[in-house]
Image (cartoon, rainbow, N blue to C red; front, side, top):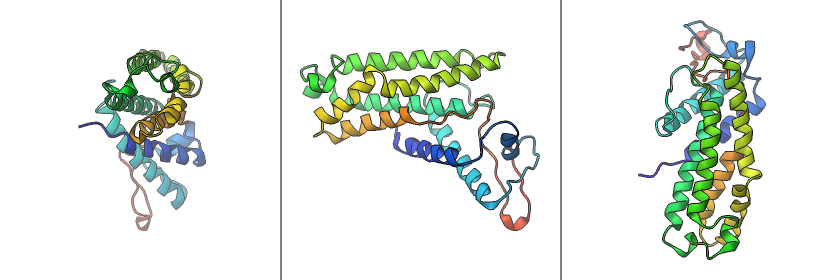
Length: 231
């Protein structure tokens, strides 16, 4: 069964909105909203409580969908929110790329006979090689530092990866290809939608501090007058 990127992309867009309006998730503020070692640290108000619980639920869904399918290894405490979001973007692009291949391979749409659609690529195989190559290069940049003691190098590499993913979406040959599909294959909604989802994933801005862990806190109902969490 094909993997479904739609709920993952929807969750990432929601997370992007929450992170845009929420307190910065770094340093002491991050410590104040994450629960480690059973220590209690209740949020200051019900609105923030609701937002944090919502983000935690979103992150849990994304983690389950992505880390069980992307083949990039450990999902333990070493997984940062920054890493998870870059992996989720990669997951969406690779999955939708396979959808595009399935929709075009063996059809006229998949051949280089329509330069208006496939330019600057020769066809679906050429496109696939380019996108996979770029994603592998970007992934290698941060993956090699994930278990290293060089934490600053890991932080820096993830920041570069987020920037390079957006560049892939707006400043590369792939970026020039995407609008061509919308124009050249406007009568093929499934193809157009796959490309739209790839573009949307690459354009997400969720560049949180790599030292921020995943939000896994759960809070007691307001009526109890307290909060507790599990790390």
